[in-house]
Structure formats: C-alpha cells, structure tokens
Length: 68
Image (cartoon, rainbow, N blue to C red; front, side, top):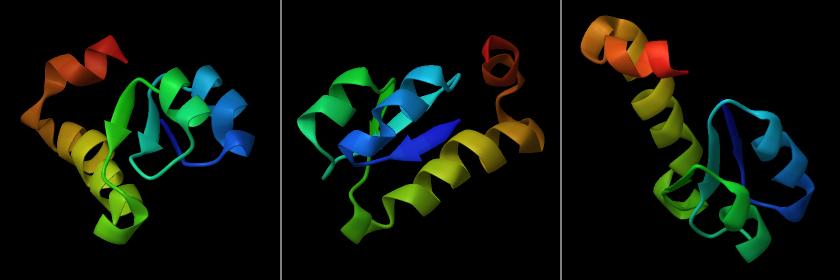
C-alpha cells in the first residue's frame, strides 16, 4: 500500500499493490491510483491507513487481505 498526492508519487503508486491518492493531489497522481482518499486537510493519509491497513488486518475484511 502506498499513499501519495504529488507527481513524484506516481511511480510509487503504480508499483504498490494498492495505490491511494489524496483527493487534493495532482490529476496525474489521481489517474494512476486505485483509490482516491480524503484530502490532506481531512487527514487523508491517516484515514487511508486506518481503512486499508489497520481495519483489514483486524479481521474485519479477510477477503480484502487475500486480494492484496
């Protein structure tokens, strides 16, 4: 899983199993992401970690972990 908002994050998002772009990120970054998350102002990185890393590993969504 990778989280980014700038054009310097594009390659990282493309290589990650789950690429999350913040909603205030560049259009290029959002175009390569698997998911568009909340903005920086809305604590988008923390929200993405909670939703896609912590929540899934707590057994709430075992199917999601198997997909990744």
